[in-house]
Image (cartoon, rainbow, N blue to C red; front, side, top):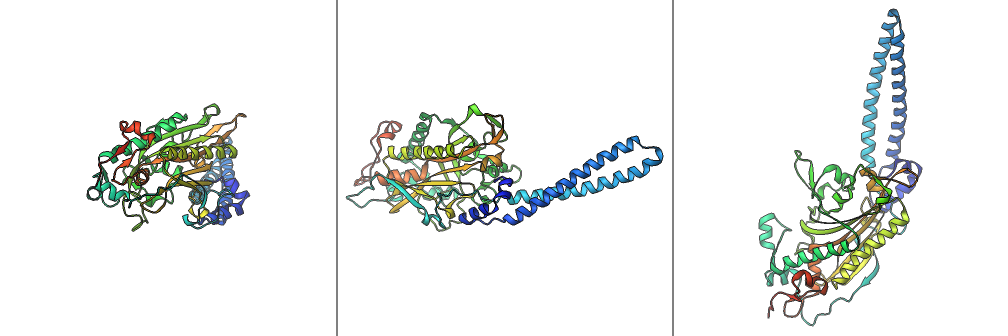
Length: 426
């Protein structure tokens, strides 16, 4: 959420940010409501003051005067009640519109309508050159009896799957390697709920606007399944004032993630690329409200993910996400796209985002600075590893001519020292 004072002072900046993100935003209505709300607030304060004064006069009045003063008090009370109701209604409408205002993207965010306009910054690694006809992860997984999509769909519907044998072990090893890598860098490991309250989804910027992507429980529970551990981890200190000495907070969490993938009918239907449930290791940073510090954190969390991919010997590229592909909360986002031979293209595997105080304002997540002033924190997050897309890249890039898969050296300790998985298929 943007500070209403900023919207008042820089309405054109807010409008331009919304235009760049291709997100509708009624700044004029927000400013109109804000003026009405403040004017009505002053009227309510004045009525409360008059009511208080009238109460004092009643206490000092004679019996003859009291009747008229009581009638005046009754009128004031009725006027105050009506105006308080109007003030509350204005506040609800204003708050609802403020929740829809997108964060203003950084100047470095490129123009563009969708992911096709994202700008490549750099690449790493050599794409594999096979001396044989490579298989995609589905064909290879089914040939090795590692992947059962038919029974996964029978259990839970389309875009579900069952991992078996070595592929299940590879998933576990990859997730643990990613987690251990972050712990070695000083990140605090967390195990967090994957069912959270609606207010937590609102606080982190997923609602309103992302409800169709989330699995929601019924009204009795008011709980949602998260699509990333970012949600509970970022909200961990909601409504708290943190000590300056405690910052920055660096957290890492592994969780199961759930996404409805609404609006993707017919898109990426084969295999594990776009599924409803997967594992993810997520890194979150909470720090002081310093744009330069946030930039440095952004660089470091991106490098953390790149280091994991390099250790897994997977070629990738980093892109600067354009305005039209940038979500509502982000100031800027860098995506990492890993090479997937079965697609013949790079596929998104990581997203590194910085938010400044956008999420913190929604969460009321604050700290006390060196001068004793209470300020909103800055937040950032990035994927360390997402299980299904990591498995696609590992299996497809490291497959051998006989259908076995080489295990990168970094993962061998997690797989009992094994150097390859599977049995020769020919």
